[in-house]
Amino acid sequence: MDWKTFLTVFHVIGTALGVGGATFAEFFYLKSVRDGAVDPMEDGVLKITFYVLRIGMIFLVLSGFGFLLFYRLTGQEASLYNPKFLAKLTIILILFLGAIFWQAKKVPLWLGGAGSLTSWYAALILGVWRGLEASYLNIMLFYFLAVLFIAFLLGILRKLAGIKP
Amino acid sequence: MSLLLRYNLIGHVVLGLLGVIVFYAAWLALLKQNFSLKFLRFLSGAGLTFFLLSLLSGGYYYVQHYGNVVKPIIKAGRYPWAHSVIMETKEHVFLFLPFLAAVVFLVFWLLGERIGEEPKLKRPLVFLVGLIAVLGIAILMAGITISGAAR
Image (tube, rainbow over the protein chains, first blue to last red):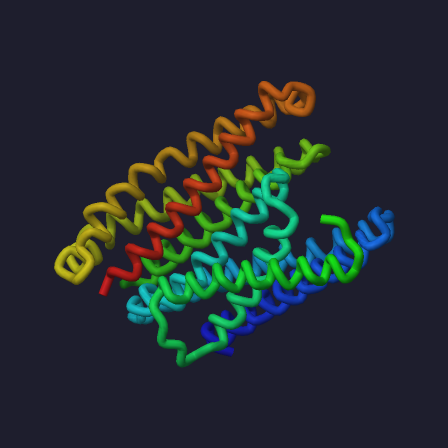
């Protein structure tokens, strides 16, 4: 297995764990708070889901920087100024900072879940969309609109499930 | 680039990245109500070690290769500011990190038991650990910018 394949496999596993973790975290959370309280069993499931999500994030970051080194050492430095790559990097940074604000309880519930979910899916989509020709600003604008849209959708889901904001 | 210099560059990036990840994890852990002092002591020791090794590895690469080969390429290319602004800033700001990390390491080891009881000690410590993580992330971004300009 060459280095690029190894890094790609590692990167895909990280993304899969992150996207899966973020999706299940949101669903488990919605299901857990439906009755107004999170019982110890539900708390345990949520903790494991967040743990998997963090492992995914570590895999993603390590393999991402592996790609940086790969491009630098194989003369493909121009890839590092690709708008898609820079947008993905910004979104991962938002994920990192979001986790800190979430932990410090400085993020409202409606924004935290939507931000995490949208960021993980955005990273996945940017990673697999090979022929995407868009500027950095366009990608980021679309991303922020997507966060608001997902927050709106999750709000409707919460209302339908009878969860108080 | 010789094999030794390649390993230097890889070591510089990977060790620096691990240092940032470790301090980011310490920041998250410290924000919790019930944190494990043992875990924080381990993280601060590991982070300090990673930063020192990254500094040594990067320093050797800078002196032996970057200044003579990469810097002229960047300055003659489309993004000369990647050296004159970003690299100049990076190499000075990076010097802070091992010292800040050493302060955090000493606080966890010498005053660790008091952190949970004294908010006056915990609050600035959260700020300091957060500052290390944020500066570390900024330096990682600077590294990507400089690498991208070396063509």
